[in-house]
Image (tube, rainbow, N blue to C red):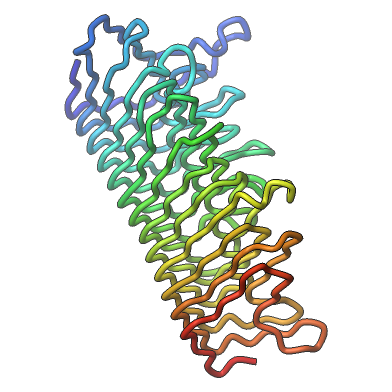
Length: 361
């Protein structure tokens, strides 16, 4: 079932009474074949409002009678959309019992001023055993309007059999939530589900909270930029033990660039590897209670502040900490009137190898 170069605009179901809320669908597409697929290409969705509980702001009910199917949005524009139901979801929802068997590809699309109450204003995804690919998309001004939003642009609730999530070559600009939570991407998972965020830019995403949150135990971040041109917010927060890689990435003008929030009884199973990253004009670069942290081939520029440490490790268990081939330039910090770059509690192994500290303190 394919739809090309079609515009859908100025729909609303806000007039529905309470008995019909959650049922305001605009599309009803049902397949019954292992070969079923659904494609929207070159379409425009403009000024739509829907409370369709499984359909998002575009009001799409799509299912394949329990069979996995492919749905693709390619070169589409989603503008001025509002999902008004009291749950996660926005322009696109593949999360509820109606459509959670989908492999969803969103490619070369634009989401401009899309909103929801709780989160995932552009994309909300939680398929039982499907996969999510988001590629070459722009998310401009995606936001939540509720008091406890999560994931201003993308909210992912991975399930036990959800396939690896890939988000790459995307721009997120002014993606926000109306609270101190996760402004652009919120990835939640019960176990080993993997998420890769690659070659993405995050510009001015929020004034409080964090840009990205992961509660999976497997996150790969490669070639991303998190940048604030005005008011600062925070970068990435991890909320589950596991293994994490942060590669070839830039963190510019942030408060906390990378941090970890979890019950400290689980910290002995968290390992983070940061390679070839740049931290510029950042207050805290790392705030961690971790098992193993390896920072290599990375640069720290102009990270200056008072009454704080540049690298803060509050650790109650002896673990491994390693800095290798790193440059620290004009990193001036002071704590309790003492010049301090790194707070190092008792670790089983601390290694600083081939590092340069230039014009620091």
